[in-house]
Image 1 (cartoon, rainbow, N blue to C red):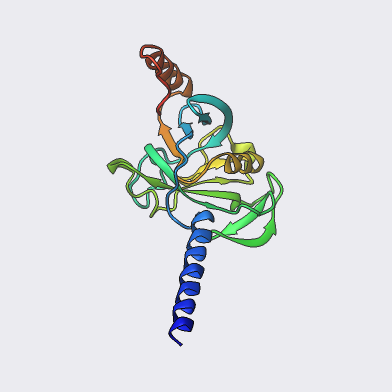
Image 2 (spheres, rainbow, N blue to C red; image 1 turned 45 degrees about the vertical axis):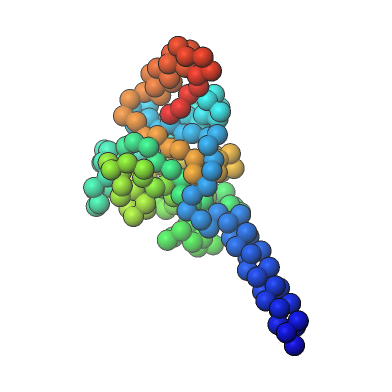
Length: 209
Protein backbone atom coordinates (compact mmCIF):
# COMPACT_ATOMS: atom_id res chain seq x y z
CA UNK A 1 0.00 0.00 0.00
CA UNK A 2 2.81 2.38 0.91
CA UNK A 3 4.57 1.64 -2.38
CA UNK A 4 1.32 2.37 -4.28
CA UNK A 5 0.88 5.71 -2.50
CA UNK A 6 4.49 6.75 -3.19
CA UNK A 7 4.11 5.82 -6.86
CA UNK A 8 0.87 7.81 -7.07
CA UNK A 9 2.55 10.87 -5.53
CA UNK A 10 5.43 10.65 -7.98
CA UNK A 11 3.01 10.45 -10.93
CA UNK A 12 0.97 13.40 -9.65
CA UNK A 13 4.14 15.49 -9.18
CA UNK A 14 5.31 14.63 -12.69
CA UNK A 15 1.93 15.59 -14.13
CA UNK A 16 1.96 18.91 -12.27
CA UNK A 17 5.47 19.67 -13.54
CA UNK A 18 4.48 18.82 -17.12
CA UNK A 19 1.43 21.08 -16.87
CA UNK A 20 3.57 23.94 -15.56
CA UNK A 21 6.02 23.53 -18.44
CA UNK A 22 3.20 23.54 -21.00
CA UNK A 23 1.69 26.70 -19.51
CA UNK A 24 5.02 28.52 -19.48
CA UNK A 25 5.76 27.50 -23.07
CA UNK A 26 2.38 28.89 -24.13
CA UNK A 27 3.31 32.28 -22.73
CA UNK A 28 0.92 32.32 -19.76
CA UNK A 29 3.62 33.90 -17.63
CA UNK A 30 3.68 37.70 -17.98
CA UNK A 31 7.29 38.04 -19.10
CA UNK A 32 9.79 36.13 -21.15
CA UNK A 33 13.42 36.50 -22.15
CA UNK A 34 13.44 37.88 -25.67
CA UNK A 35 16.52 40.04 -25.31
CA UNK A 36 17.37 39.92 -29.02
CA UNK A 37 14.48 41.91 -30.46
CA UNK A 38 13.60 45.54 -29.83
CA UNK A 39 10.98 47.75 -31.41
CA UNK A 40 11.37 51.52 -31.76
CA UNK A 41 8.07 53.35 -32.32
CA UNK A 42 8.38 56.91 -33.58
CA UNK A 43 5.42 59.21 -32.93
CA UNK A 44 6.90 61.75 -35.34
CA UNK A 45 7.46 59.28 -38.19
CA UNK A 46 4.44 57.07 -37.44
CA UNK A 47 6.73 54.13 -38.07
CA UNK A 48 8.09 51.18 -36.12
CA UNK A 49 11.61 49.83 -36.57
CA UNK A 50 12.33 46.24 -35.56
CA UNK A 51 15.91 45.76 -34.37
CA UNK A 52 17.40 42.31 -33.85
CA UNK A 53 20.78 41.81 -32.17
CA UNK A 54 21.46 45.51 -32.61
CA UNK A 55 20.76 45.53 -36.36
CA UNK A 56 17.72 47.05 -38.14
CA UNK A 57 15.52 44.32 -39.61
CA UNK A 58 12.29 45.85 -40.87
CA UNK A 59 10.24 49.05 -40.79
CA UNK A 60 6.44 49.07 -40.47
CA UNK A 61 3.86 51.83 -40.88
CA UNK A 62 1.86 52.34 -37.70
CA UNK A 63 -0.61 54.66 -36.03
CA UNK A 64 -0.30 56.01 -32.50
CA UNK A 65 -2.99 57.94 -30.65
CA UNK A 66 -4.79 60.86 -32.24
CA UNK A 67 -4.95 62.33 -28.72
CA UNK A 68 -1.16 62.57 -28.35
CA UNK A 69 1.20 60.96 -25.86
CA UNK A 70 0.87 60.26 -22.15
CA UNK A 71 -0.16 57.61 -19.64
CA UNK A 72 -2.99 59.14 -17.62
CA UNK A 73 -5.91 56.72 -17.29
CA UNK A 74 -8.80 57.77 -19.51
CA UNK A 75 -6.61 60.00 -21.68
CA UNK A 76 -6.59 57.70 -24.75
CA UNK A 77 -2.95 58.72 -25.23
CA UNK A 78 -0.04 56.51 -26.28
CA UNK A 79 2.53 56.09 -23.48
CA UNK A 80 6.14 57.08 -24.07
CA UNK A 81 9.28 55.31 -22.89
CA UNK A 82 10.40 51.74 -22.46
CA UNK A 83 7.63 49.14 -22.56
CA UNK A 84 7.69 45.37 -22.80
CA UNK A 85 5.57 42.74 -24.51
CA UNK A 86 3.71 41.12 -21.61
CA UNK A 87 1.30 38.86 -23.51
CA UNK A 88 0.87 37.60 -27.07
CA UNK A 89 -2.69 36.81 -28.14
CA UNK A 90 -4.14 35.37 -31.33
CA UNK A 91 -1.32 33.18 -32.65
CA UNK A 92 -3.53 30.94 -34.79
CA UNK A 93 -6.23 33.42 -35.74
CA UNK A 94 -6.82 34.16 -39.43
CA UNK A 95 -5.70 37.46 -40.89
CA UNK A 96 -8.43 39.99 -40.16
CA UNK A 97 -9.96 38.05 -37.25
CA UNK A 98 -11.92 40.38 -34.95
CA UNK A 99 -11.18 40.40 -31.20
CA UNK A 100 -13.40 41.71 -28.43
CA UNK A 101 -11.99 41.72 -24.90
CA UNK A 102 -9.04 39.79 -26.34
CA UNK A 103 -11.24 36.93 -27.53
CA UNK A 104 -11.98 36.14 -31.19
CA UNK A 105 -15.59 36.79 -32.18
CA UNK A 106 -15.49 34.56 -35.25
CA UNK A 107 -15.81 37.52 -37.62
CA UNK A 108 -13.07 38.19 -40.17
CA UNK A 109 -12.65 41.61 -41.81
CA UNK A 110 -10.85 42.67 -44.94
CA UNK A 111 -8.57 45.74 -44.87
CA UNK A 112 -10.50 49.03 -44.87
CA UNK A 113 -13.85 47.39 -44.24
CA UNK A 114 -16.30 50.32 -44.25
CA UNK A 115 -17.57 51.58 -40.92
CA UNK A 116 -15.59 49.15 -38.78
CA UNK A 117 -12.74 49.83 -36.34
CA UNK A 118 -12.18 46.80 -34.05
CA UNK A 119 -8.97 45.12 -32.90
CA UNK A 120 -8.01 42.49 -35.48
CA UNK A 121 -5.50 39.73 -36.31
CA UNK A 122 -3.00 39.80 -33.40
CA UNK A 123 -2.55 41.45 -29.99
CA UNK A 124 0.73 42.26 -28.25
CA UNK A 125 -0.29 43.48 -24.79
CA UNK A 126 2.26 45.94 -23.43
CA UNK A 127 3.37 46.77 -19.91
CA UNK A 128 5.36 49.77 -18.68
CA UNK A 129 8.80 49.65 -17.08
CA UNK A 130 9.03 53.29 -15.95
CA UNK A 131 7.05 55.63 -13.71
CA UNK A 132 5.88 57.63 -16.75
CA UNK A 133 4.24 54.56 -18.31
CA UNK A 134 3.27 52.53 -15.22
CA UNK A 135 -0.42 52.46 -16.21
CA UNK A 136 0.17 50.88 -19.63
CA UNK A 137 -0.91 47.32 -18.81
CA UNK A 138 -3.97 48.36 -16.79
CA UNK A 139 -4.99 50.69 -19.63
CA UNK A 140 -4.84 47.69 -22.02
CA UNK A 141 -2.42 49.34 -24.42
CA UNK A 142 -1.65 46.97 -27.29
CA UNK A 143 0.20 46.68 -30.53
CA UNK A 144 -2.61 45.29 -32.69
CA UNK A 145 -3.98 44.98 -36.16
CA UNK A 146 -6.49 47.47 -37.53
CA UNK A 147 -8.84 47.23 -40.51
CA UNK A 148 -8.36 50.99 -41.03
CA UNK A 149 -5.12 50.48 -42.93
CA UNK A 150 -5.70 53.58 -45.04
CA UNK A 151 -5.06 55.65 -41.87
CA UNK A 152 -1.70 54.07 -41.06
CA UNK A 153 1.09 56.60 -41.19
CA UNK A 154 -0.91 59.18 -39.23
CA UNK A 155 -2.11 59.33 -35.60
CA UNK A 156 -5.48 57.57 -35.51
CA UNK A 157 -5.74 55.30 -32.46
CA UNK A 158 -7.21 55.61 -28.98
CA UNK A 159 -3.89 54.90 -27.27
CA UNK A 160 -2.75 51.65 -28.84
CA UNK A 161 -0.16 51.18 -31.57
CA UNK A 162 -1.96 50.06 -34.72
CA UNK A 163 -0.52 48.07 -37.60
CA UNK A 164 -1.74 46.52 -40.81
CA UNK A 165 -2.95 42.95 -40.39
CA UNK A 166 -0.18 41.26 -42.34
CA UNK A 167 2.45 43.45 -40.69
CA UNK A 168 1.28 42.69 -37.15
CA UNK A 169 1.15 38.96 -37.93
CA UNK A 170 4.70 39.17 -39.28
CA UNK A 171 5.90 41.06 -36.19
CA UNK A 172 4.08 38.62 -33.88
CA UNK A 173 6.03 35.72 -35.40
CA UNK A 174 9.37 37.49 -35.08
CA UNK A 175 9.34 38.59 -31.43
CA UNK A 176 8.80 36.91 -28.07
CA UNK A 177 7.51 37.73 -24.62
CA UNK A 178 9.56 40.35 -22.82
CA UNK A 179 10.79 42.07 -25.99
CA UNK A 180 11.41 45.80 -25.49
CA UNK A 181 9.25 48.46 -27.14
CA UNK A 182 10.63 52.02 -27.07
CA UNK A 183 8.06 54.71 -27.88
CA UNK A 184 9.81 57.97 -28.72
CA UNK A 185 8.65 61.44 -29.77
CA UNK A 186 11.44 61.96 -32.29
CA UNK A 187 12.52 60.32 -35.52
CA UNK A 188 13.71 56.74 -35.80
CA UNK A 189 16.51 57.89 -38.08
CA UNK A 190 18.01 60.25 -35.47
CA UNK A 191 17.62 57.63 -32.72
CA UNK A 192 19.41 54.92 -34.68
CA UNK A 193 22.08 57.35 -35.91
CA UNK A 194 22.88 58.41 -32.35
CA UNK A 195 22.96 54.78 -31.22
CA UNK A 196 25.27 53.83 -34.07
CA UNK A 197 27.63 56.70 -33.24
CA UNK A 198 27.73 55.61 -29.60
CA UNK A 199 28.36 52.01 -30.61
CA UNK A 200 31.21 52.97 -32.93
CA UNK A 201 32.86 54.97 -30.15
CA UNK A 202 33.36 51.93 -27.89
CA UNK A 203 34.82 48.48 -28.64
CA UNK A 204 32.17 45.83 -29.11
CA UNK A 205 29.39 48.40 -28.81
CA UNK A 206 25.89 47.63 -29.97
CA UNK A 207 22.48 49.24 -30.07
CA UNK A 208 20.90 48.99 -26.64
CA UNK A 209 17.63 50.87 -27.08
